Image 1 (cartoon, rainbow, N blue to C red):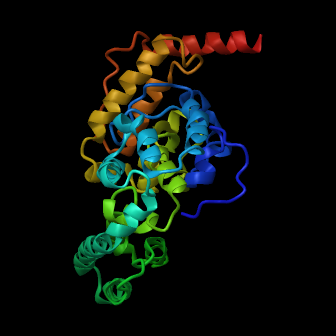
Image 2: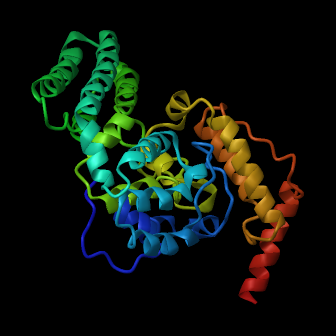
Length: 344
């Protein structure tokens, strides 16, 4: 990810687009009612999502951070919402300022970069090994095409002693270009899904250190904060025909959204087995907000998202609406009544 310069006034609407390459308006504008909610559990990662209204005040305080200690003190306000990777980096920073309070957090990452790069290479190798194992189910011709790509990646990993490892996105795109035989489509799809587990700064402490040791302190602090801010996620990805309607949207943490990419929800659950549990916490929070009157006109959302999650997860997510005061018919009437008042 490359941070853009000359960024306009920071707003909740443009924040993730400019800083995390996740659009918040346009195609996801129907999710605006969800973005306004507070104290919502991330359905992917189980943390409490940092609400959009916090962004402006965070940016003002960030502009005043001059030292490593300043940065740690600012981030400490959001510790309870940090995801595992960001929490691990934050713990490193806390140890660092005990001895170097007036230093810079970028220098902290530079100090440990070499060791983290070695560990990152091993993490990548393990995923490539899994990809190669899956090719055994393919024809020799198809298997050779993929193994030539994984071999090239290994060569880059081994031969690069000081620079970043191979580009994950390029490798994923190269797999997408392979046209499988009819009887190999499912196997190749499994291979592509496995390749999505290659480490990123969202999933790996080592990848984070390697990537952000090249970034300024301000960008490092912002990146840790952004990971837990709210983002609108398509349950069925738009690339797979998912509709841009609230019934196909979840309010998730930005990191949970970005790391899933176009990964099928079934595969994402394999990576994070607690997702069904987190989904129930999420819907309970949504129900609470509806009961408080904070999602008027969308009372049918719990029923729509329950059905959508059941379909996309192939039955692995079965949320309960036992706490909801509206039956499906009553919810529909509440929406109809709201729309009538609104258009009157």
